[in-house]
Image (tube, rainbow over all chains, first blue to last red; front, side, top):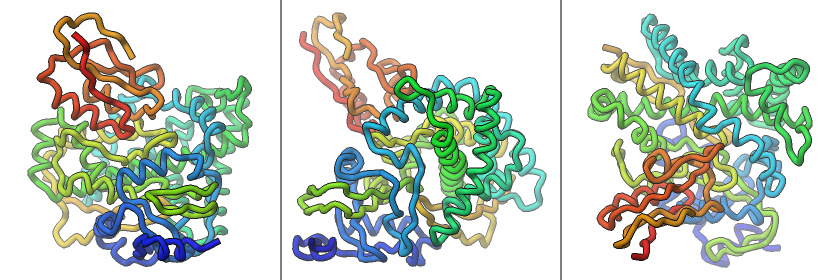
Length: 396
Length: 77
């Protein structure tokens, strides 16, 4: 069977390097990388590491994400890394029709009507964090606010309200960004699994009013879900509930702190916050689960696919290609920041509510702020997303 | 999904493909007069007919659906 590279060369598919482990620009200007990838072609081959296809425009991404029969999500290695690192993160690592059953059980737990009564808690945590941040001599939005809000809210909701939030956030960060081989990844998953396992076993014995108890009450095919599988789902929730929203908020605020007109708009017209979240999530798309492996032969944009082919979903560049600049009240605004199809981000409603409250309360309380003089932004990319690592602010 | 009986001179309505809907919730956030959430966050259309001059605004709502599950169609007079 000809390799992906041989097929690319014989069928005229562009070959272009996307090296997510070694491209230094990912530390300095990651969006330049994504813009470049989308400018190459809707579909191309990257020879980095074990080699993989890259889908980089909306239509190709949509085709891949909808075609789960060809492009499987079953537990598999991260497509772009040199070392083979297996990710087993149910229900992301399931395919329909089994995925559909678990997804259907989980969806109601994260629905908008469930979230509405939780909004006062998010507002309270937001105010508390702002109080704490304002008391610091060197406020940093990411260290003091965006890394803390999702952690405090989500961990409390999950049932880990008494946990050491700093340690929990560090564990989530390690699980996403700080591993270079299977052993390190397994070690952090094991550590998270123990924390989440203790919680779920305690709630199994004595249910409480929290997300862990709701997950344990889920049924699939009329039967309760196996506790170990429930713990695996809880492990994913532990990571995804913290890293994703915090990272997205960091980028949103990085934009607003650099662009006084947009910051002013958020202060003067808070009713635009929802639109602003959409636009800044589009323009600073942080990634999200980004690989699929072909489970059968097929065709993509005329290119012959063989079982085992790896593909990377470069959503950030695709979303930025819709419009190359930020316009907070953009309408219409289509983006893929929460994914597409069967695996659409389960927590998207949670994330949107957290981000909207975070921005509204912040701008009520802190209308004047800017990036500290001399700040050089640093970013990092890991497993499926990128993040800005710090954001020091001058306030007032 | 809902049939309208309120229009006599035509007009426009949204059509939502529930098989494509993945529950992003953009429709009922952007056009709450025309869409609502079901019990778990997926979109439902309301029985509303819009005048023909709303076409551009309606197409913007349809465009915001990441799943391309929404279309705008003419209501027969």
